[in-house]
Structures are given as C-alpha cells and as structure tokens.
Image 1 (spheres, rainbow, N blue to C red):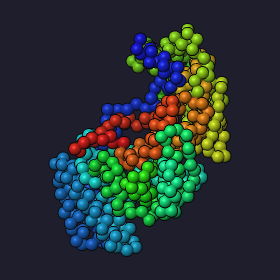
Image 2 (cartoon, one colour; image 1 turned 180 degrees about the horizontal axis):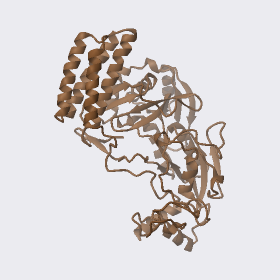
Image 3 (tube, rainbow, N blue to C red; image 1 turned 90 degrees about the vertical axis):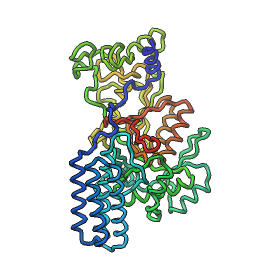
Image 4 (cartoon, one colour; image 1 turned 120 degrees about the vertical axis):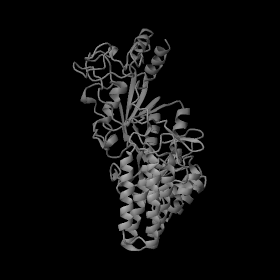
Length: 497
C-alpha cells in the first residue's frame, strides 16, 4: 500500500515516474588505462626534451621530475606522481611567461599538456580518493563546447575535470544576485559590464537576478584563480581544463567577485538528456521487454513494468489512476505541469493533452512546432526532444496513440520553449509560475565540476525560492551512467560534481 500511496501522489501531481538516466555504480565511467597514462607521460617527456625554446635548466629539471613521475605511477603512487607533474607544469608556465611570441605559445602548449597528464593521473586514482593541494586551471584548445555560440551571438566555453564532467557556459556573461543597486553598479564599472536582463521573482528572500555581459574580463587576475577557487570550494587537488582564454578570464572574474562575498555565478548551459532506447508506446507496435510476464510488447500501459504494480520498479502509477478515478480525482487539466524544453510538436503523434499552452522566451521562435536549437548529451541530434519529454511525462493513456505518461490523465501542460542556459531557465521557471504551473520539469543537465560549485549559487537561490513558493521542480540527472553522488575525500569528503 505504501508504494501505491506514493504512486497516487505522483500521479496526482503529474510528476514523471522515471528518472531520465540510469546511473552505474562507478562515479568515473572513463577511467584511463594504466598503459594510456604511461604513454602520455612518455610523450610529454619526449616533447619537453625536443622543444628547443624550453630553457636548458627548465628542461633538465622537468625531465628528472617526469622520470620520477613514471616510477611513482608504476608503483601505484598516484598522488606523488600528480604532485610532481604539477611542479613540472609550474616550471613550464614560468618559462612561457619569460618567453616571447611563438616561443611563448610553444612552451605554454607544453604546460597545457602537463595539465592534461595531471588530469589523467587524478582520474586513475581509486574512486573516493583525492590527492590534495590547490586546484589547477589550464587553457586546452582541444576542448570544444557543443556549439560556438548560443542564439544571439553569445560565445560558449567548456570546462572539463578529470572525472568525466564537462559543461558549457556563456563565456562573457556573469550572473549577479543582489538587491543593492550600488553593488551592481560597481560590478558594471569594474568590468565594463552591460546589464542584459533583470528578473525579479517577487519571492521573499530571493534577491533580484541580473545577467551582465562582461567586456573587460581580461583585466582579471587569472593567476589568482586557483587560490580563489580553493577558498570557495571544499574540493582539493582537482585539475580543470577550459576551452579558451576568454572562458578562463570569466572564471577568474567570477572568483574575484565571489571571494569578496558577492553572490555571483556563471551562466551554465545544460544539454538535453535524451530518453533511453525502449521508450514504450500505446500504438499497435512497440519494443519488446516492457511488458509484465512476457518478452514481447503489449499496447497496454497497465502491463508495462515502469508503470505497473508488482514489477521490479513497483511504481504503481496505473493502480493510482484507478484509485483516483474511483474517487473522482482523475480530472483532465487539473494539475498545471510545465515542461521546459525545445522541440514541441503535438502533431507528431497526437498524444499531448488537449489543454496545451505554449510559451516562448526566445525572441523570434514559436513555442510550438520549432525544432530544438541545440543538441542532446554526447552531441546527438534530438530535434523534437520536448515532444519526447512531454509524452514521457503526460502522454494521454488509452487513446491508441503515442505513449502513456504518469500525468497523462490529469495534466494541464505548459510547454515553455527555452534555451538551456541557467539564467534563461530561471526566467522560464518564472514564466511557468506566472502561468500557474505547480510542477516544472527540466530534462537537461550540466555536470558542473565540484571546484566550480560556487558558481551555481544564484541559480540555487532561485530554485530554493521557487520551491518555497509551492512549486515542485524536477531536473534530469543525465544519461551518462554516472553516480551523481560520487565523492572524493582528502581530510573531508565532497561530491565530485
């Protein structure tokens, strides 16, 4: 009965019954092989020995250190090896600053390469173990964001950490949460900023949210970023790569403001998390493996494992439908449910609830019938991602078409066509709330490295405020088989992302 009662609440509220993304036991899905790490160490050694612009003294000390790195790694002493690579990287950075022109770029590329080797060493450490020390940040131009720009010529950058977390952000936008005009004006002056948008949710305790376009990020002290990041985060010993200098400079700007006790953040960009293979349908044909007690397909949602009682999942959504119907609570359109996404096409299978309301916060694009402007996890094409999510959450049951979602019998759907950067998402949540939504679903995610966890504080202030106002918020956990609660420990523990 407990399962049925929980499922009845889920169905009444219209929340999706299943998380989009299964998560494996390991927090690091792509641990490098030992042979791969040894090859990278050897390749770095050869590059240092053959690069003439590297000063002789720097070259000799770096090669001695790298020989010890190789021995340490062979003996499975990962942390001493990572520490020695940090020292090599530091020497190369100093040498690049003393060089000029092409020589500077050549030596700087070696320092970046050393940063990649350190990241591989850290990734090869046993799960749950960190190595300590300050974080490092390197520009790695081999790292590419999902797209060059968001619509509106908003340039993107990407960060990556050793644990498989990669996330994009707008490379010239700072998110500021404050009600103090003098504080905002000072930030605008300091970085020659332009105020792009201000959103006031009108919720007690939640400050106004400001999106600022930064024009003088290069004036920041990128060299102070590691020390500032260490003050702002519990993480230790991480190696973060950034796709370009503009992105690194913006992180440095945000860190300078944050250590001065100002609530600032980065405008992270989520990627749509596609629905896994085996999505069930109410049409005449479907994929085998979802039907209770048989290997084939049956066009009956009451026999589908992910909705039924008595299956491994034992969600009990269909039982909840029956109970709610018996007491007169299964009323179409009784629960306003907002889906924040792109690519809504009701005509695809005619399976959206009939009371659909479409809203768009992207100028020039209609909410309904416009394809997804981005891509999904892994860069895969998903032009009608919003349609799949709407069907998964609120596909109308017993209509001989499409899917059946937990909220199908009761949802009043609000399709909010929105970009997936966090500031725009926050504005979309405000739109959904103004339209009466009690529930909002965001089937996209951005795995922000733990070293930069402080950059999402303004967004968290918003979501906490919206939750306190009565909205239920659901977000994707991703489809990368990652344990989103995976931790590292060095004296104390913290989540990796």
